[in-house]
Length: 144
Image (cartoon, rainbow, N blue to C red):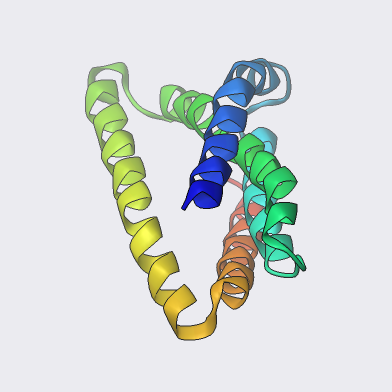
């Protein structure tokens, strides 16, 4: 449990540290490329983690995945600000927040279920591959 807690800490420290820089990246390059890059780091890191020979190799990957996670708020808020009428922004932000919270609540349930069925390595490969499929779908949508 200590190792798992440390991995989660590395992920969230990287995510928190990255958000400041991600905001500058969004301002300079736009939300879309930053968001797609973050999804790629998060999903790709999960997929690669499934092939690691030892749990301690997951620490640098948890950092990479945390950097990928750190782009979501800066990029998503820029997307919302650009596409939602000002009088509806409060509702848009709250919907965004609820969606993120549901994702954080469901992720352990889904990953535990998959890990119990097929082992943690296969679960990471499946989840990472699903993330890359979602990335490909988003990348092909011009206005997504």
